[in-house]
Image 1 (cartoon, rainbow, N blue to C red):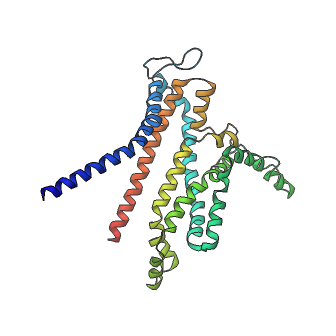
Image 2 (cartoon, rainbow, N blue to C red):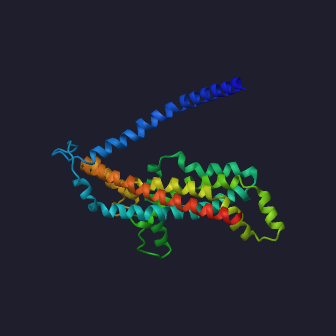
Image 3 (cartoon, one colour):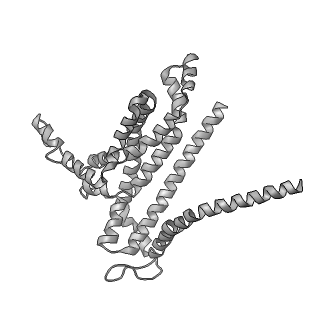
Length: 294
């Protein structure tokens, strides 16, 4: 008995050493490439801007006291990011449901490839294309041809929202598709045999089982939108200013690294708070649903 326990302990030790060896490169990469830059940015946020731009070592809270001057950027980001995520979800779910449940296996792969085709080119190129589509020679010119004049689409909140949905829709489609594709079709058949309508089966079976994919897609889109700067800069024409645009301006043009660092730290804090609240809400709903089913 003692020999068996010793052998098992040795095997556990070897397994632990192997796991540690496999995780060591990823842990080192995580610490070097993620934690250290955040520490540097946090240190910079307490410094001062030098007369020629850049960073001067100091310890002051002046940069954080100046954050209200960028209130508009935070307001726009916290407005467009949730609404862009919600709009992407409303468009992506029917598409993912169609691909996972309704499409035959013969055409499924082709349609999935078509969903990711936009990612084959740079977001910069695709955004330039939308500048032409929404500009004076695009959709407004077509509307003017049929008698609808003075329609302005470019450099508007509508243009920014269109760019957001177009750019991030595939990131919402695929997590939902994976959840729906793993759905056991026998559950839907059993619901139908018990007299359940298709709509009721969707609400009680399909929708709850696809919640993990919806949560993953929403987190992917929301987190990326919180740092977005390309779409509002190109399609908003400088009128729609995100926090990402403020960071580009502060670091590259104004060279006010301490204030830019303070804005970046505040963005991280806001993002952590919103993601934590969202995850708590999602987990709470999932727990309540499981208890009701039991």
